[in-house]
Image 1 (cartoon, rainbow, N blue to C red):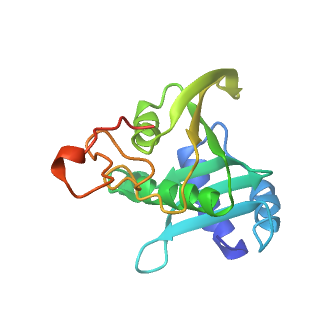
Image 2: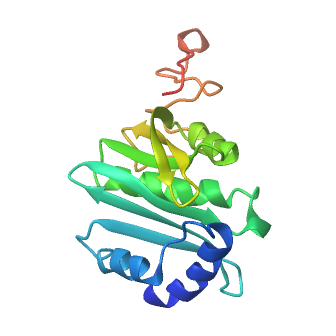
Image 3: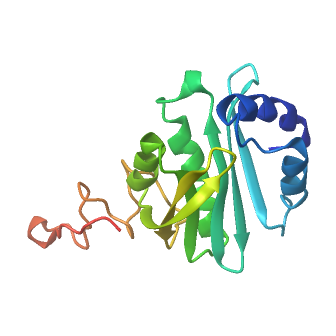
Length: 182
């Protein structure tokens, strides 16, 4: 994400999060830290003609990462774009050496919760009244040891096997061990 993306990002932000949208100033502040050696990583997803249809942001400080935001235009939801944006953030957190990656998600957004769960995030707590002014609680979720090689839920990395993708330490089928996700 660059400064020239703020205007189209704000259009999506206001449409998707009308009650608790970030301000342009908040994005300017975040992007001020999105430089080599900075604490932020922001990305946008665009169509072939350059229209911004999704965006995501990460804060990484002292070995801890936090998903700051992730959003996909309603017309592009269900296409895998949210998963691709999340994968980018997880990989970046891994590259930055984060021991864990945290996020907050509205308790009334089960679709987003399922996306995060498919990527290995687990619920760890509730923040009461986190989303204002609607006074909606946030579910706090955590991913331990984000990997720079994260491949998403359909292709877990070798060190984070999924329930349908056993870890294999040898090529002999009798040595395949079914390891639970997480």
